[in-house]
Image (tube, rainbow, N blue to C red; front, side, top):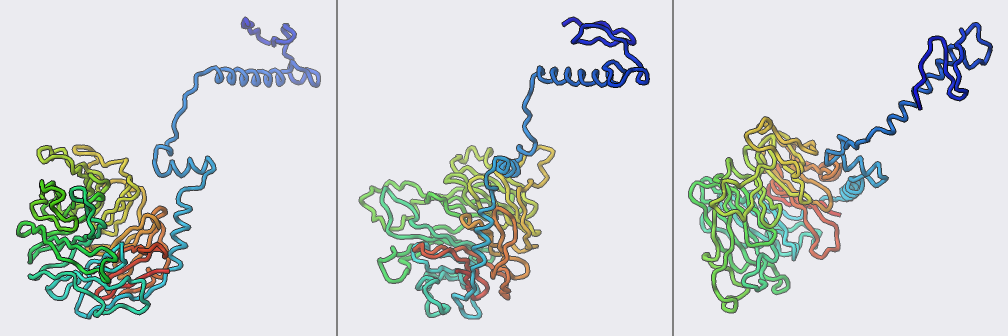
Length: 472
């Protein structure tokens, strides 16, 4: 349509295709379409219509919301907009319901001069395995029955010494079960295995592999021999260890870095070795992974990826498949924690729960790795996706455990209690656990599973010479 020339004092009516004189408001008759007020209102409506038509003709672009670029908040808000149940509701309600039914009882009491430094449960029998220190002597001990079968506390007479080193050693630092431990030359072993580490310092550090009878083969889970398969070099402190999920590899965290203990093919024909036999020393080889600081915490992200938490606050990822000649590209800095790392746990493949000093307990997302050096933000701590109200100012040996299925974190506090946190929500969970003063610092905290699957999980807390159980 051709644009009409605007004439001063006149208004062009598009319907009648004529010019009409614009009359002053006080002269124009009532309801006139050509008064100044009416014409001005009509022009405003036409301008609004022209703008709307131009906006419709303009090419449109979709801009992603800033909140959706954040993995945690974006997932929560997008699910809410779609009408889905908000993530965390089920976990929060399930965890809160579980902790309200926990009841406290003492399941084991040792002599007054004995101290429990580590605690684990045999997943096949439910028997407890304890690292017990009496003076300068360390022993690995086991209960005769499951801690859930007896209402009365177990005593010293119901314990069996699995092994005790001939020379005094230092504090037990880690205790792990694997059932079965591994397969040799295609044979399924009939024995379960557990390994433990001793810290060293004034005495020699050691790593011990203990074999246990198959459940049901005997009436008690006694050992059939202990095999000390590694003694690190002198003046080495062993802080922690972790077994690979697939077996055959053990990571040992020390003040000299990580010692990888790996099983290798010995060349012995499959039929010439009993499937129940312990492999000789020649079947194992060790190699070192360099770190910048003491390795205080270990966990496995996958069968070949090892997560290492260090005293300097760095949490590194090591690919154990990388040969020694290419170790310059290994590891990858995943997280920089604001303090020394005391514990690290892998949660649902892509997240880490890291506990440290200075009251730090955080969850990190591994999909957002810490920037490498050199970079502007390299010295800064990694931004956590969730923080917990933890109270541990300076103790590295405090008990800690995570049950991913329950969605609960259990962490020892400076006030000699154990606090439960919701894994997905970060909330403190009020329960009989946090309300129980233990009278000592909990060094061993462990979520146990019923070997028969008939009862809910329980929480075990080792404090000085007692083991406390919180269960339904």
